[in-house]
Amino acid sequence: RGRVGVREAPRLNLERPNIERRRNSPAYGSVAQVGACDGVFEESARVLKPHGRLVFTLEEAASDFGLGAGGRFKHSEAYMRDAARAAGLDVVACDREPMRSQRGEPVVALVCALG
Image 1 (tube, rainbow, N blue to C red):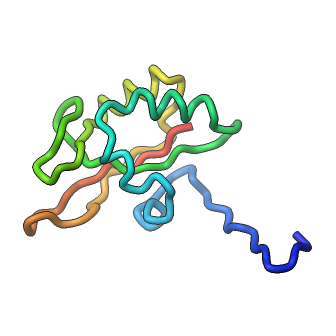
Image 2 (tube, rainbow, N blue to C red):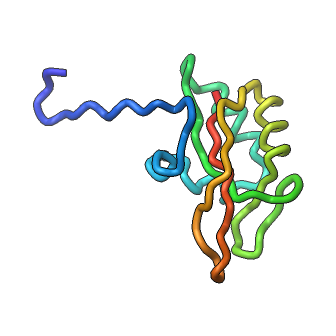
Image 3 (cartoon, rainbow, N blue to C red):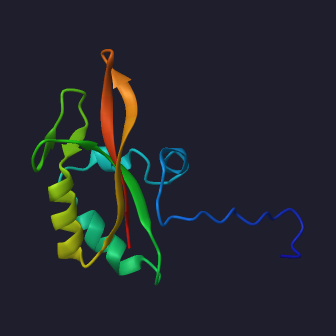
């Protein structure tokens, strides 16, 4: 406030992330480049401020995690929840949304917020 040329970033309500907000998240799509999420979640738990949120998307898999046909990792909701719990993070929200199309078929994403 009061500084010339500096805008305050808009405050987002991340209690229930939606597909519009996920596109503005620094983590949008980045977890698709990670297989095991344990280290990402542990480090996030270490650096998050109180009431902070880690918001990200995951391509959904039927079980655990693995490399999908598109060259991105896919993760199951159960795997994500177990990894979050092991890191000491709560799952604040986890919704399913279409993320994009691949070969004419919708790719379903888990839109998640941990805190």
